[in-house]
Length: 83
Image (tube, rainbow, N blue to C red; front, side):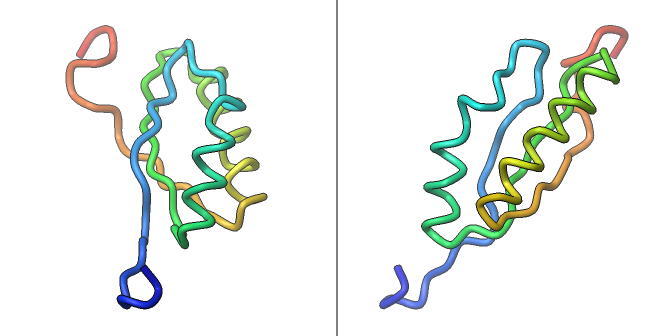
């Protein structure tokens, strides 16, 4: 990639659902960082705001350790109760 002048800005996509286990994504985040990605894109798909915030923070810590930032998308339409 480097020889061809190709880079990666961001990688997608981790949905922060009630079932997510953040640590399960460590290897993928490390690989994305190794390939030169700077950002990780996630969505907040959890109605429990406290759990969502805790998992988002844990994912941010994991990404930061790999030298990446995290972008949180708005909730995708129709995924949350009441939408």
